[in-house]
Length: 85
Image (tube, helix red, strand yellow):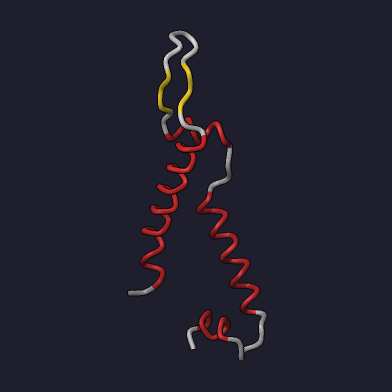
């Protein structure tokens, strides 16, 4: 199995983990009218925290790392791994 085939699965797991963390940190809110507590939906959690898209951030950082490795010397193992030798 090629490493790129596992990326959508890994992205889904990261999104699920992020949602769980947001739910634990922010949790629920009190209704203004009734005063009852209610669980926030995923969209509401993301709107409240205004965090950047975690998949986009990790992809950007991977690309920066690949560029860094590409500029390294060929004798370094990370360079060999990147170019497939």
